[in-house]
Image (cartoon, rainbow, N blue to C red):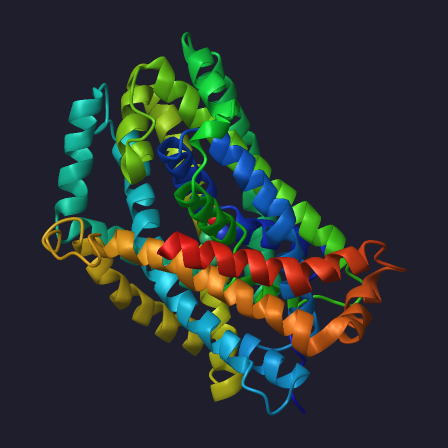
Length: 445
Ligand code: PFF
């Protein structure tokens, strides 16, 4: 007899795991970085619009395709439209899982390293210049960051081996609430610093004149990355859903949780940066260079620093497991690998794929692709290109191939009716393809 397919143990467990996938480095590392580079308030405004207009409608699509398929993402498309080439969306997603996790784990590895650097006093009382030097020589060294990258991948593999309800769900249930409380404490500390008000103003007032296509493309990529959309992570998590789950409500809850953590991370980082007179546009190194210098000025800065990077690691872990689960689910079902085999083998391949990203901070630093270092390029290429293309194809599939009758049927299983279904469907069918296509084309030119 075939083994029964795994399912989430409870509704809350699913919500926390999916929110765990969404909330990660994208919220705490990437969001403040792009806000800082894109001029503050105006970015937040566009980000909000894109979440509601594109992010949430697309998340509903992904969860519904997943639950209908009850399988890996390649097979899900084959099941809904047999004999058509739409399964390629699934194949793209599996490939994207490898690419994104490979550099994601490198950055998460830095975060693990920083927990120990803080707690051992190695980052004590540094100015921004010294902390820049510490960070620069740490990431440029060929071996040390690779070890932390390996440790992070090993933790990810460990959780995925335990499977859906005993591994991923249990880990999320414990880690997500702790994360929220820690973030809240740090935000309170940051906004009460003298001089923080300037930062708050900059963060929250949109300067409408500053708007341009680069900011819009950046916000789009950020929404996809942060909500784990465009590569089948939400489809895969949706495939473990039972029929009594209310998908539109879940999508709303997950997205709002993700949004609030990103905004909260901004409340930690931006006011502190202003209070200490640093540059908000310092780029991807913002949290690794500026924050240690900020913590150095706080009482118990070491402890706060250790705490901050612990929670960043926790958040990254609950996202990394969803990135690994996409290919793992595929290899278990299609090639009959065991969960353990799939997790270990694929995790190891991803570790190896991440090596060039890690080395691009040092010995491979001169090797540029389109003017970017390898890690930056992988990040830009996946968030601003692969994920939005995956989203565009998914919207076309739902709107024009699966059709309203098919998807409404699946969508309304968990609730009496989805009152906004016609509006939602028109958004998916017309608005999403047009807007995504337009932003992708103009943004890339
Ligand atoms: N959403 C995660 C974050 O914000 O860190 C990253 C991520 C996870 C992206 C899963 C894509 C994905 F499929």
